[in-house]
Length: 253
Image 1: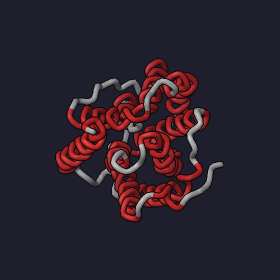
Image 2: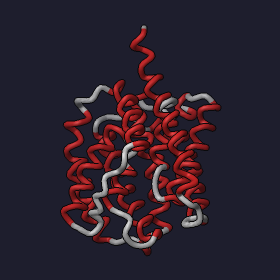
Image 3: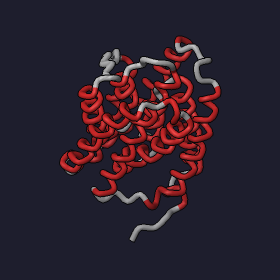
Image 4: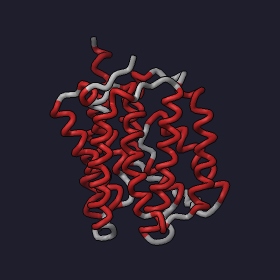
């Protein structure tokens, strides 16, 4: 029988680190448009067991994105979000075939390599933000990808494009990511993942993530991207390499 444990039996130091990372990741995405989800999963990969990494990250990011989507809802496009959601729904229906064929122990390696790719490779310029077929395919492909690597925010951002003002972009992006994370959580739940032991920790992560979103929206448009990119790349590279290194340790024993 499932039972609720105090912060999923993680140490106090790790709990504090996850809460600070949830705040920083939400602030990052709200103020700069993208990057917070990848940052959070890179930190979590060194703390959370592989089996729980993707679904637990999904709930934390759902709380962050849903709060941001609600606060910017009057700027969102129902058509953009709706068509993207249809593609995401089809991906969620196909996810059962994917989840049953992946060994959880490989997930940290996938995450580490994916983060390195996001950090150093140029993002493709899909810019399908107004085309129904592009939006549908974006929802389908990025939602399938999130089942394996979690942090597909930069891909969704590239797919939507950054046309319009920052508020419109933030509203559409946050709404699409909320749909994607919600469907991912449902898929993992149907696959048998036990969320109950993680509830206290997730509740706190969602709360501090919401506070990070509030803080980030207050400085939206005020931070120059060029001062952030180099530091972000250095931090993300170190986190990704640490994730891969931790994953590789059992191979030597």
